[in-house]
Length: 608
Image (tube, rainbow, N blue to C red):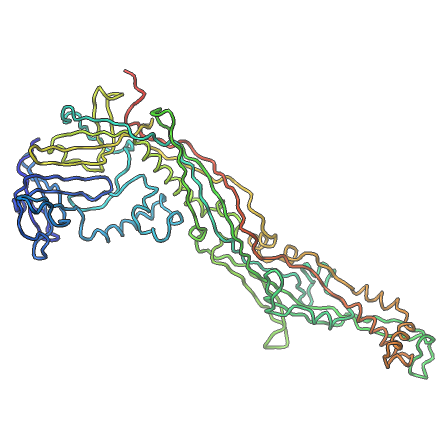
C-alpha cells in the first residue's frame, strides 16, 4: 500500500463527499494531524499559510473534507467543522483545528440515548432523574463507549474490551521497527462489592368489616364474635348512640367508610315485684306479685373501616462480582460500588385495591341497598413490606450487576500498547477496531487489544500511531455472570396490612384488639334480678327524687330503670395503628453466579 496526494476542501454544510469534486487543495497543507480517541469526537489539525482573513466569517465555508489517495483510490479520512480562530496568527503559517462532529449531534445523541434505555444494562432507578438524558450516565453498565465516526459522523457503541467475537486486524507485518511500546498500568480490580441502598414508602390500602349483620342473615365479624352474634341489650338507644358515624375518624389512622345500626325487638325481660314491697297503683289488683317489663333489642347493621398504611422502608442489597484474572500484581484492588435506588422508580403502575360491601337502608326507598366501597393504591409492588424480593426488582439487580462487570472489564485492560504503522494502513483503523501484534519480546508471543486511539500525521513523513489496551483475563471469549436475591425476612407490619394485601378485606380479627363487651344482656338481666327494689326506692327518696316519695309500681319501675342505666351495654376495643414508625432497615444478601470471564489478550503466565 502507498499514500499519494492529500487533499483539503472547504465545503458547504451537508455537502456529500465526492472523489471527483473534492480532490482539490483549497489550502496548502504544511502538516496534518487527525486524532481519534475513545469516546471523543475526532480532531483534525492542519497547518496552512496564514490567510490573513477571518476564517470564521459567516460568509466563509466552515466545514471541510480531508481525503488522500491510497493505492490510487481516493479515501475520505475526515469530515468536520472549524473549531475556533487559528493558532499562531502572528506567523506566516497558522494552525486550524476541526472537530468531526455533525451539526445535529445533540439530537442524534438524544435519540441514541433513548434507544440505549431499552437495554437491560440500563435501569432508570440507578440514574438520577436529572441525568437520564446524559449519555455517560446511561452507559454506566454497558462496558462500552460512544464512537462518532470521523468520516460519516454516525454514532455507535464501541466495546471497551476485546470480547473474543470481533474480527482482529493483524498489525504485525506493518509495525515500524522499534516503535513497539508495552507498558503496565495500575493493578486491575478483581472484585466489586455492590450495595444498593433501596428506599421507598410502603403504601398499602387497608379495609376491615368487624361487624356485618344483614337482616335475616347471621352476624359476622370480630364484634359479632365477641357478642356471640348480634348485639343484644336492654339499653339499645344508648348503645346505638355510640355507634361510629359514616365519615368519622377513628384512632390509629382509620376512617369509617360505611356504617349503620338498626334496632329491632328481640324479646321481653320481666322482673316480678312482690305486692308487699311495692303495691300496684291499681287498687283492684289481687295478685301477690306483678311484672315490671323491659324490652330487649338486637341489631342489624354494618361497620366498614378503611385506612392507608404508609411506612418508610429501607433495604440494603449487597452482592459481590468477581473476575478471573492472570496474576499480574501481588494484590488486586477491590472496589465499592454504592448506588441509591428509589422504590418509586422500580414499581410499575399496577393498582392494588381492597374492596368491600355492606347493606344499609336505601336512600331512595324503604328497603335496604348494598353499597360497595374500594380503597386503592396505584403501585401494588409498594404495598409489600419487601421490595427486593419482587419480580420488578430483578431488572434493577441486572443493571447494577452490569455496572460492576463494566468496572471489572475496564480495570482488566491494564496493558497499554503503542505502535506506529504506515499512514495508509492505519486509515482502516478506528476506536472500534481490535488489533494484534506478534513479537517474541512479548510474553506468549503476541498481544491483542481494543484500539483506544489512532492518530494520523502528515509532515516530513506520513505515519499512523495506534494505541490499544489489552486485558489480562483467562478466557477465549467474554461472558457475564449473575446474582439472585436470597429470600429474606421482611420487616414487621401490622397483621391487617398483611391480610389486606394478600387476602383482601379483613373481618376485624387482624384490625381490632382487646375487644370487650361490658354489661352484656346476661349481666343486665342479673342486675335487674338482684336489685333490692325497696332499698333502691328508699335510697332515691333520700336523694330527693319525687317519684320515690310514694312506694308503688311506678316507683319500682323507676328504680329498676335507674339501676339499668348504670349498667349500659358497652363495646370497647382498640384499632391496630396504621401510623408509621421510624424507618426500618433490612439487610438483603444475594447469591452470586460464576466469575466474570475476561478475554486473555496477552499471556503473562507464558514461559518460553
